[in-house]
Image 1: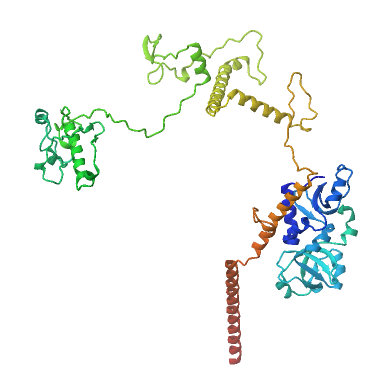
Image 2: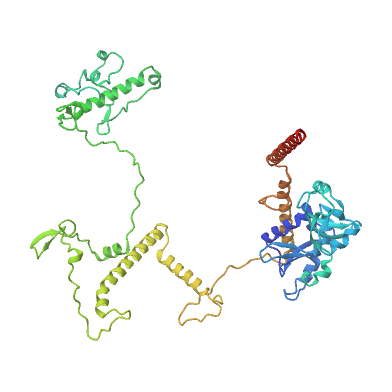
Length: 180
Length: 359
């Protein structure tokens, strides 16, 4: 376990800022308890400093996971967000998409969000913007990238794609072995 | 200078000339009669005839300087002094040099200039000695110049060593190696050539090797002189280069040099890679500050290239007016062509209908 290098930090925060914009600072300046990011086996964990202090006494092989895993660095040096980061993304997301109840299941099986299933969308969402997907009851389901801006989406026919699927909570079942 | 020069005979006899200035076109605009050719100054005007320059070192008072025509007067006096000096030089009649003034025109040869002028070019840098030059100096070996000619015992003449009519035997007349002595027990070469061929080829190979050696030495001399000029020790640099190369060679094995056999008496060269360095895991406050500043940077786009991140996204969202105008124009163009095509087809179909009606 080690802190992120400046280069890693930059890559990671830039990826985060696609979904939560300027709110990345809010993750580090919390009122309750200080939190930080740590790298362990190419994965970035969001850990409270109290837990970190305890975990520091273990070696790399002795730690399976600590805190919340946000995602992993690929071998090419890019960062890939995992569904485990959804809780924090959902709290701070700048652009949101709500899916109708009849669209929840298709989305949770890994399909894109269609116009027909689009319940609501944040006003002025641009094209290719990272968004968090919620059910109509405000339960976060996953995140993705908009295929069209809010205005362009209004004119779309019901069967065309509005939001490209990236992750969904169904991965906890489908992709369990890769999550950790 | 326009017009023929006047002879200087009488000038030398009587002192400075009185009327020559007008003839030379150098006379001031003021009437020449009032001006004397003799220039008298408290400090005599110093003249450098070689560079054709005159210097007036007399003190100039401000009120004089302001006065009208003073500078002109100064210039005239100095020029007069220079001309006087030129005319006081021994006169010669040149046949060729003064072509444009006609043969026998008087002329003077200017002496070498006395004013020291600055160099146009920087001083040439000192050439560093080659290894041989250093050795020769230490041993007191002096370069002996060969005579250009040499005695040829065959023709019993002194002939040039090289070049035209030189003592160079044409290539096709070289007969020295048409027969070579093969030592006892010499075996034919592997490539099927006999021992004689190999013997004949030996001098050529030796010459080639010598050229290579010379080239290497030249290169070494250049490298060493460069190092010396840069103020470093060439021997030390060479040692470092060898060590670096050895290090690279040793680490170029499958195990990156870890399991290589150590040779007897060999220095232990440990292949070194770049060591990664990370911030301390336990320095929580320092890490906090670093993360926060980094997050702030990414969030605001400060000190970041705007290719990715928040700022870049904002930039992407701004309306590109040029692009938008172009898109609108293209759309209208497309619409116009479409309309024209529709009109055309409509016209044709109506014509056809009319024709059909006529039938």
